[in-house]
Length: 226
Image (cartoon, rainbow, N blue to C red; front, side):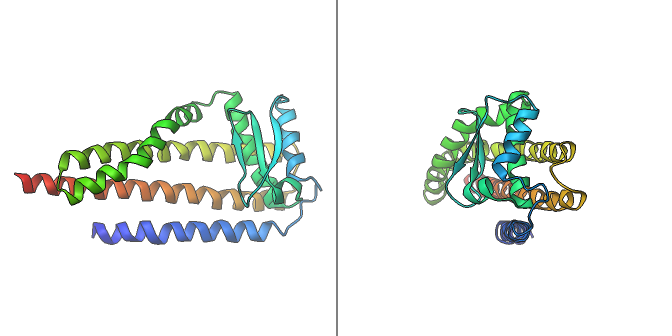
């Protein structure tokens, strides 16, 4: 039963999440905001209204490559969202500014996630080396080391969830309070951000179940050794 659930989670849920994001973004990127503001203008307005004059807004190449860089104090928006006037672009821009607001307010989970980045990167890069050697060579100690390293990546995925949810919450509060969207557009923007949040939930679920699968393999090896 576990493996049926496992395969459903690692295969079906991520595909479903990605399809929801593509569908929501594609739909509402064709709906133009009545404010007439570009994503860049939305980001700048929210930043200025929150006193974050030192945070820059820049264009970045790629599709849905939008992000906030806490080191450079910069909100980077993909070309479509930077110059576009769509509801989807408004939602994405506001979400990234939500991260800038978190940074300015020293939001706990964001600080924890940032501190986990080097550990999670190392764990993600090296964990499978030890896992594969441990499984094929039947060396449980190496497998355990791989599991511990992978756990760092799983922790990062889990901490990411409240960070992303909170950024979306802040985004929705800002675009409503500042009158950037109409009542109908507010609901549409929420759909875009909810769909995006689902991808983080899917990634966390996959990471957790992958870790559990390896733990089961490890316990099986331990029983064999006994």
